[in-house]
Amino acid sequence: MSKPVLATTSLAGCFGCHMSILDIDERILDLIELVEFNKSPVDDIKTFTKQCDIGLIEGGCCNSENVHVLKDFRKHCKILVSVGECAIMGGLPAMRNGIPIKECLREAYLTGPSVTANTEHIIPNDPELPMMLDKVYPCQEIVKIDYYLPGCPPRADLIWETLVALLRGTEINLPYEVIKFD
Ligand code: SF4
Image (cartoon, rainbow, N blue to C red; front, side):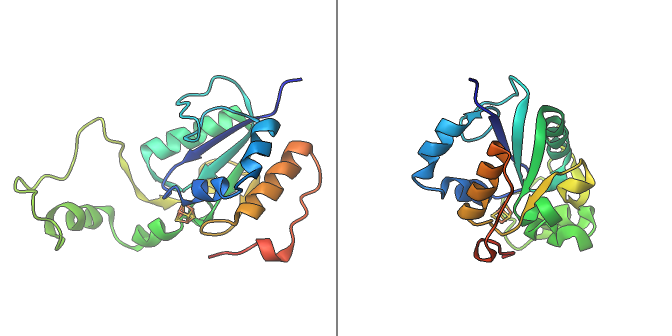
């Protein structure tokens, strides 16, 4: 019998949520038995090769590429899970939301105290680069999200218990201690 298929991605995240996935430690061996991985930084598959059962999303959307990837995940995954505060509410990167994007770029590339080598005073504008969005958006403002796992990052036990319940189609029963928001 074929295994359920799992995909994961990091949008405007720090990969800390992926580290928390790996924090399930030796249960990673059980996970490999339970699922087949598709597009994910875990296996380095870059594009979807089939429809997936579950997609885990780390990070919100701060640029056009994030939006494209998120919509692609919604198209290819039956169940989409926002993993971590960045995916759920923008997280720390959303601290820039109160500052106009032009001002953020000027500070980062032109006037900030750590800018020393940009002698030509260029704000990167190569067409290969994704466009920055006016602010950082939580995933549910772009596509429908089915489940939310809070934390920065969420505890490995929270990710594991939720994943196993979703894979087995059983009730998600989470003890209070595994849920946190920091
Ligand atoms: S929620 Fe925290 S750990 Fe996860 S991607 Fe955002 S900053 Fe990193």
